Image 1 (cartoon, helix red, strand yellow):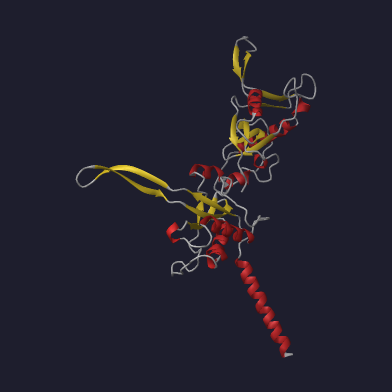
Image 2 (tube, helix red, strand yellow; image 1 turned 180 degrees about the horizontal axis):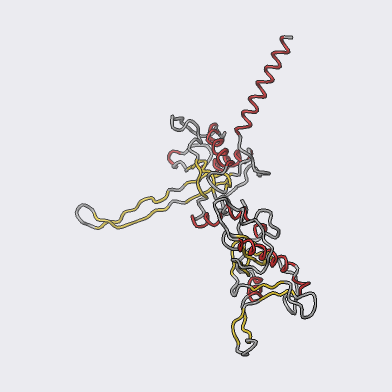
Length: 356
């Protein structure tokens, strides 16, 4: 009987330790590849926020003995992190020597140089939308306490009060390959995400990198149906009902473009058009196309189709620049149109925002 009680106590302790250890691990990203010997290099696609895990540098030839090079050690550390579900990469930087002219104490000109940047290789991990991301914070704490074998078994590490572990100095930073402007572009406004949540044909679901803005709605829509999406967007935001109408009108145009063939648009070559809608703080826009490059030839074709054109004035006959329009005719001849929209005079290419 006593033996059974002891076994139960041991089992409880074991389970408790397992739960504690598991709860400390970060939430692993799905299917993180970990192939020993494969190089995982940092690119601009990663991030924008990441964890600077460690920086490694080569030992001078005079002091070098057998062992791993900085590159080999970095690759091994990346592999160890990836085995634990953390996407990790290596980032190399070359030495940068800058030279300048100066004067010595006697006023003579002399040429000097200094190392503006020392060569080294860093291990960087994670892909997070911002520094406050919950997964980012949990992963950072895990890494700070993590002791990779490549260091504990192959490297030299001296414990100090300020850095009890080999990776205790890890910190969150932006991808070093990205400029602050690029990071700002990739950071999505939470309000935009909320306004477009669950919207059919949302631009946030466009799989391309670019799309062409062909219509913008700021209010005063001819459509009487309104939604409460903008009114409920934020407790601190008071948005007029005209924006609700604009949002509805933009969505209706998007749907009509996707069914353009049955409405006879464009005239002479009716075809369904890949259209999307995006609701912003002060407007709603309609875009067409999904492009991976600004040089995609389809962009120019769409710009010509939706952009303004020279047309004769119906009364004077004088040619004038006129915006393109889309009309859904009435149910019978002579009946008023069911709907009509005017496109922006000059379509503009925009980057597709990403939902985080």
